[in-house]
Image (tube, rainbow, N blue to C red):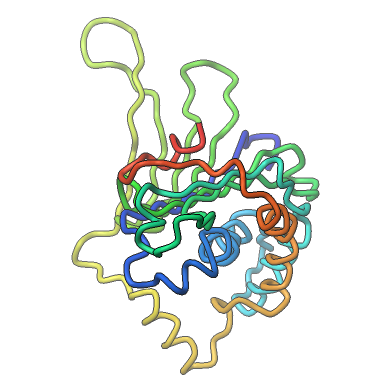
Length: 247
C-alpha cells in the first residue's frame, strides 16, 4: 500500500513493428491495442484487494473494484509517439497514429492514494518485455527498493538487494536476486490457457463486460484529446529504449 510503495510501472515493450497489421493498426493505435486491454488488466491485478480466503471465481469482481477506483485519465499526463518509418509502412505521410503510449493514472483507493501509476507500451523497441515494476519507499540510501514481476519472456520475479561488496572494505553494492521458472517447466501458452479455461467453463481469467467498459471510460479523455490534437507526437528511431522515448 501507499505506506510502503513509492510508485508502480507496468511496461509492455515490443521489438517488432506493426508487421502485417497495417489496416488494423491505422484504426487502433497503441493506446487501444495494448494499454486499454493488457496493461489495464495487469494494473487491476496489481491493485486489487486479496481477501484472506481467496476464491478464483471472485477474480473478475475484485479486478473491477480496483478499476472502479481509478480516476479518469488526465490527457496532460499522457504522451504518444511513433517510430520512424511507420508512415511509409502504412502509406500515410500524415498519420498521427501512436506506436508508443505513456499514461499516468491515480487511484482513489485509500490504500493507493498518492502512489503514481504509469503504463508504458511501444513498438519497435530494443527488446520484447512485459513487466510490473513495484518501487518501494526508501528510508536509507542503501536500501532495496525495486520488485519486478516478469510476465514475459523469462517469467519470474526479481528483487533488488544491497549486499556487502566482496573484499576488505565495508561498502555495499546493488544486485538482483532473481527467480525464473526452470526450462523443463513448460508453461502453458497464453491462448492455450484461455482455450482450456473456456472448455472447462472457468471464467476467472476472462475480462468481464464491466471491466472492459470501465477501462474504456478511464482512457476516454485521452482518446478524445488525441483525436483533436495533431501536435506533440514524439518521433523515435527503431530500437529505442522504451523508458527513454518520452524523455
